[in-house]
Length: 296
Length: 274
Image: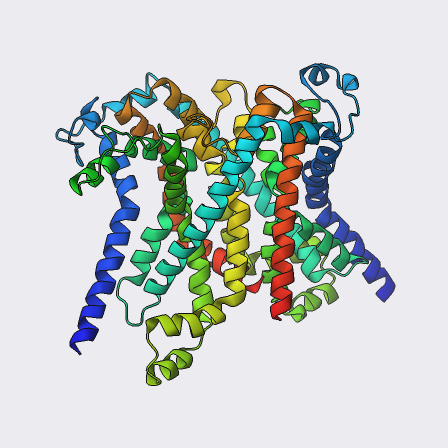
């Protein structure tokens, strides 16, 4: 009797799982694995018509990729964006979360909604908005800075300023997300810790260092790593705002992958770039796991 | 006492300045969309339209046919959302409440997908869908949204917290698992299904890279792709582009404001446990 019920439940389980497993397997895991294979071939525009013309070339795509001048620039730009932009974004998020955590704050919900709003906006649309805000002559930003006596900056036209401009826009767009995660994290730190520190005469900075930061530990680590990984995937901002320019100063890894793969149909090279993104992500995830385990 | 008051005042000043800076790009977007052609490019740049006009919105629906892309985005987003909620919640139920050999191992294998960026598989996925004849179709745009480990994970957590007795009683009464799922589980997990729906809706509506890749016929473009395309041609028409941006952003903001509580729960609940 129980055996029949057990078997019936197993059959039901596989029926419930079938659509999801089929789709995740076919449209996610299979392509990821195929990408590894594809990166070892010279799959190009001819192979697109006749896949049989693609040949195995070993690690040639990887070797070529590292020699490619645009790739080298793209790596540098992506690291610039991730190593400057992600920490900045995390700091703004933490600052906003801490302000919103203040005791007895009125309109907390309203502030939180406002700060979060950019997260749910359409990236392409707000990137276009920011392109106009950054306009050297008509842009609101230069107008505002001008009234403070800061000379006009060609934000998106000057290779020295284009990446900072994209970072500022990305921080504006993203900080609300991590702000919510920090808010949840801050709520787990008991008020008594702060009260005790206040009685001991600890200032703001001491409370931050000795209570807030350790209390947030695992959350901070999680946020830092996932934000960094997210920032490695930079694509739409430069695609819409600068087309990777000026002088390639905002060409990111994924933009390079897109151009190689879908503009020039060099799928082999593009897959090698995709694998690099995979390894980068994997590396940072492993670092996070190791650090969080070390803590526990 | 006085220092405390100053501290409070500074806190509110900081929060208000932050709020103004955060809203400014969005407010300017809306404001410029009502300006006369060329008005946004005068010096000094005006913050509000002198003579508000709807002409850009009219142009978007007549001359430029943005309505078509609005409709494309709506179809794709709705399809992705409905199927994603159905497929992921079914899988989540199996992982949470049904017993079968290899369940935990399978689940752990699936969670590997959480650490692999979608872009890693995009090139082969494009080739695969090309073989299947799904390039340049809405189905092709929607496919990556149908099933996702993140969604399964989120709903599974929620279902696991339901008491088993609820299901046992129904099983003893002879109800099949599909009946149990539909008439007992789904009604009580509606909150998390709303969360999942809001997540899927917003990411499908806002997505750019995948529809850009899979669609080549510009009549099928979703709003973000059409907008990016348009912004190349109409780079001088600031006010027109702002109207297009408003139409693209607005549905996302409205859906967020309506489902804010559900959406925020998804972010705050999912991350801290992990």
